[in-house]
Image (cartoon, rainbow, N blue to C red; front, side, top):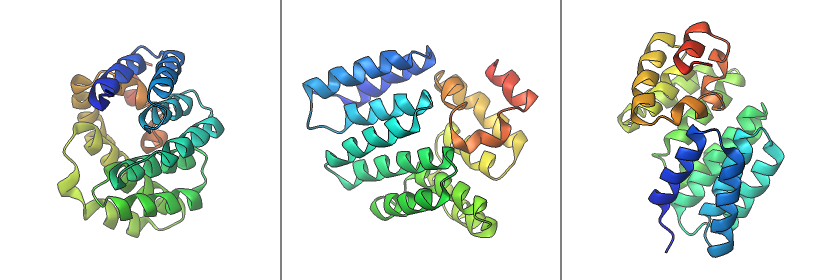
Length: 197
């Protein structure tokens, strides 16, 4: 039986090692063994996102979407696609997919931060901040808190939450370099020192 938590732990360990091809190999094994489950396709898309291949990432996220069985799964995939569109600076598609994600699961923090990035880029900063501020009760994990304050351009708080996030999950040191929530800080010396880039 496919254990999502076990798979996530395994994949996050591969991310920590920057073994993106290892992630693809493992994802393909999952797809072969569980072709009707979304998870293998989602992780293959995630690996392609980290490798900078947004076309392949979107293809595999769509394959994952075809196999989603719940609103929660569809919401997760939609917000992942929105992140890819944010990386591509395709704000309209990001807004479309975050709208879908939040209709399916209003508590999807990834969708909330992705939507706020796209709104800000479209000149709707006030709406973006209202969205972030109206959902503060949802931000439980340190990484989520770091994402939110990064998007709100509060560097000091972002660094503080990131320190804690990396302690909780070492793979965060890698994912943060590819997460559009932190795009503004990629060349910041303190940010890079924290990640030891």
